[in-house]
Length: 335
Ligand code: 13P
Image 1: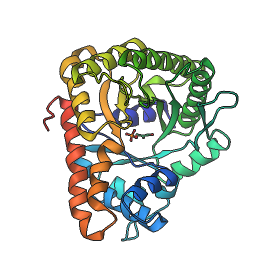
Image 2: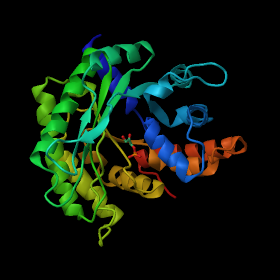
Image 3: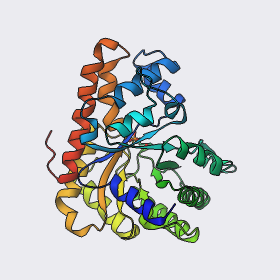
């Protein structure tokens, strides 16, 4: 596997105006979302939901890559085609989430470290054999009283870099996702400060581990006020704070930045991405794209409700959001 293959895959994932679709929720997270809508929390229902997504007409026009979960990459469409093959068939590159979740960090109440490095080399080889060409690992950083600690930022950055190096060894493009959560009442300025520190430490570790920056993608949070903050800043203020933070921390060699949505509404996530691409495109050395889960899937899940009769309407709701974000990449988004 050559470095050029990694570079080509990373560039393809953020080329033009397409973006990534995150459909890699763990079974527990998927079940939680199903439960709120009264959808059965079974493997069969999860498969039905993933089939609805993978087979949505026109999805490949706005989506370059889709991130699968371990259960999902082993599942098939009703026609008997593995989901990874079905995605490839419509021009979407299959990817895989490879971390095994955020676990309580010893000695640091309220903080987590993401696990999954043990045996990762073998798992990556298996996923590559199933058609995955990129991977994802999410580190989680909470903002709170005295949080994040340096210990939490450091261990998560270190794990992300070790994961990224293993991915590149296996020929998979690592998507590096250090998520600063929007839970809490903190200000936009506090999120900017923490995100800047987290990205700075993450890139220091990536460098220490010898990760090829041209062959990876960054999946950060937008810089936002906490969900419970009294002041909810404008779309313009969020766009400016986010781009400033990225310009200070993300090397120009990285081909693309693809945001997570993190609990923002579908409309706000698109509007903020749009604003960044309208106002700052000429200043940014990397493509600014999306890798949303909730902000793309939620309206479709609300429409589906687990009922086969709603599949077509739900697929339309899904593609409406992927196209909205495609427009936001061009700075053409209008609700
Ligand atoms: P959200 O867009 O729902 O934050 O999910 C993105 C993701 O992949 C989380 O790991």
